[in-house]
Length: 201
Ligand SMILES: CC(C)(COP(=O)(O)OP(=O)(O)OC[C@H]1O[C@@H](n2cnc3c(N)ncnc32)[C@H](O)[C@@H]1OP(=O)(O)O)[C@@H](O)C(=O)NCCC(=O)NCCS
Image (cartoon, rainbow, N blue to C red):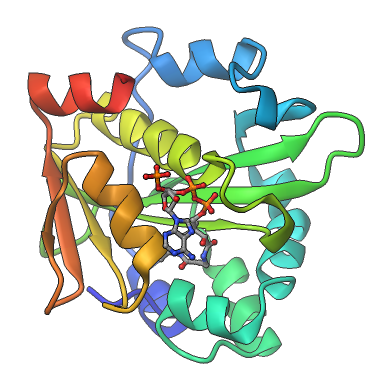
């Protein structure tokens, strides 16, 4: 599914997702531990809530047009971003943010979109990182956390939807062991021991 502001709006109605608290997830552990990568000093990765939505909006609006297109698969205007952020439904989405500990500024975001009507066992993952924080493995770390969070929510596979020229995303998900269909701009990673090993490396 191509994730646009319009599909987000239609996707946001009906169904619900309940975060399973049955075991302490790696996500919870990661959220409470210091960043392991020196390049991420000063950053905290944590689950976001409704209170963080203004930061989410500012983060998306800070992306240059080409990145907005890569993220939303359309030339997302500020108004489209407003509509998308308003449509975020925390019963169906898990948002992981990379937040600067001192200022609270959000510099990266991974989203797991759960409970798609057509594929209830799947979660689609999307990710974006502020331009100034790129190529420091932050995108990788955010995606890993989002995949863990989705698996912890009993999702059987995660999917990615991307524009074929998005080399950074293709590189990132290939390293995780996802099956990538370049021509269709689709990739998937089934939950398995091998996948869990790949994302803990
Ligand atoms: C895709 C994106 C999240 C990557 O963020 P990032 O923090 O730079 O990613 P990482 O540093 O973890 O890099 C992941 C891999 O991609 C590679 N990479 C990063 N930027 C690249 C580029 N422009 N061209 C080719 N490879 C690139 C990195 O070298 C790394 O590979 P490696 O692990 O073999 O070294 C970021 O470019 C972005 O926000 N783009 C706009 C939004 C978007 O495209 N979202 C994806 C669709 S949902």
